[in-house]
Length: 307
Image (cartoon, rainbow, N blue to C red; front, side, top):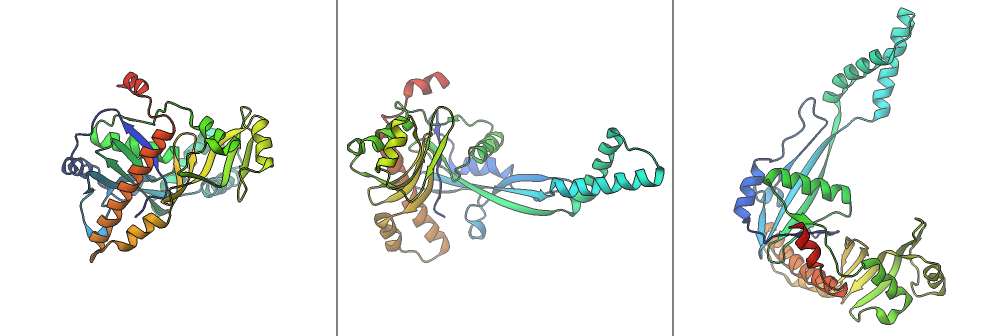
């Protein structure tokens, strides 16, 4: 159940919603499968699956929940093929040209026939609220999916005062300095072997399995490129890719965290979940706290203007 990505949102006000209250709110929008003519549907499902029917689960003042989205698979090319067949049939039999308005009506008829027969696919997206630290963390690197979940959560609970993190220092500037001069890199942060560089014109250099301190990299930086994403390791606890908006991608556990997981004792799936979730939330809170400090802390003045 470990989150592989972290999309962070800061609560503008202290979190007062309890796990029980959130569960009650989410129940109103519990997942329901697509109806006959629905193209998609979204709802909340138990984060523990069959182990527990509750729509939330709380450990150490952190509340986890999961959204399920079901979509009908109906490629545009398939719809277009059926429409073209019907148009060709009419034009051949009636010896006339089918106009746009009639073609649109045929398309609606085709959709009405195909949608109930379409296959479905489901995707799941988990998030948790760190009540103590005031963070909403979503397990996705995608801005679109993160916004989709926050919008649905806001629709469900009525209000969700969260914003993307606002930092005192520009993250891309700080990470670029780490590559220009390794002495600028904090002692507990180690450069890995991948990065994405860009410039003001939008040119992109994607480096993998690369010595980031090599002369070749230095040439890109002196030419005006700056770091968009950077692969890092922190304190023998995590490896990850950090981008210039504080989105944390491809989180991997290193020795110290893995040892904690191996030492955790549990007899049931729920106990295993609780142990993993407790370790994950504590370790990720420490990582986030450290990153915030590295980038000069949060811009409280910017938050104040949003409240």
